[in-house]
Amino acid sequence: SRSRLLVVDDSRIVRATIRKHLADLYDLIEEVDGEAGWRRLLNDKQIDLLISDLSMPELDGMGLLARIRESGEARLAQLPVIIISGEEA
Picture 1 (tube, rainbow, N blue to C red):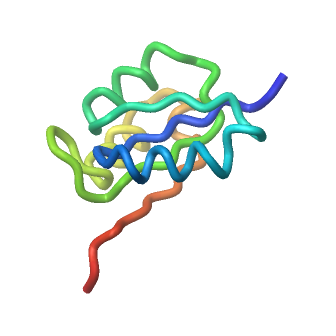
Picture 2: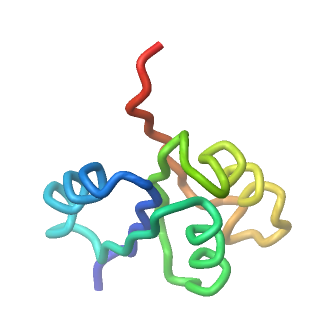
């Protein structure tokens, strides 16, 4: 079976782009904000990798990462996470 990838991004275009490039390699699931992503991570123990946007409503990428690392649950604390951003400096 394929690894499960959770993509958390409020941009439909970004999610579609990631899906286009990675859907053949991963079992891809999507959420639109950090709170929904957090709930998914708590309820889906099969997620192997998280790609999260930095800036989102409800809970941003850094807040989501902090919850993951501070969760006390080994599978979450050790989950590989990639944070992306479309913001320009």
